[in-house]
Image (tube, rainbow, N blue to C red; front, side, top):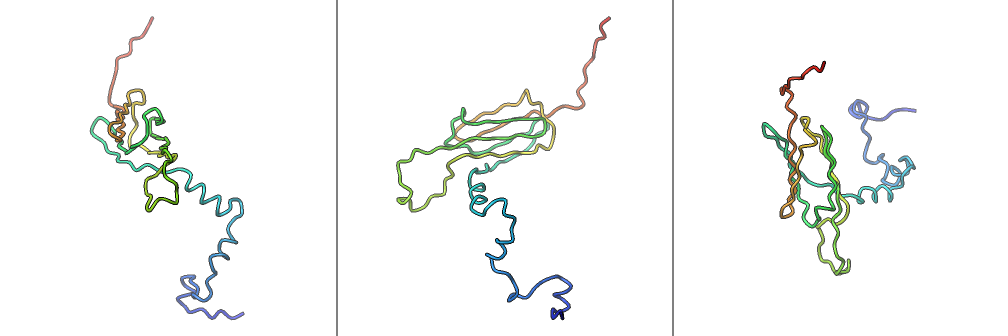
Length: 153
């Protein structure tokens, strides 16, 4: 079998447009563990929060908008190097889907995990929600702090 590809096609591994498989052929070759519909549902099942993360000399601060979520419906988990924020934004359904002209607001479950750039004091963390803005303050661990230990006899 003779290879009629150009030097460039052989070098880069590219193929001619008329030899490209169609979308159905590509999808049929994907592993069949999860169907395309199931994959799309998983992607749409949970939203992701947008966050601002910054630091001062003594703390790391995380800010995110959680408008429409009651503080008791937020779940914030903190370890020394990671923060996970979970919640659910629910809407009262007064309007039928077919009556919407445009719909961009996200309703449903959301979460976000943030890897922290420094270790924090988990016990001293503080979270405040005001006017839909959630602010989490995480004091950094002071690795230079020393204490005197008394030896018991």
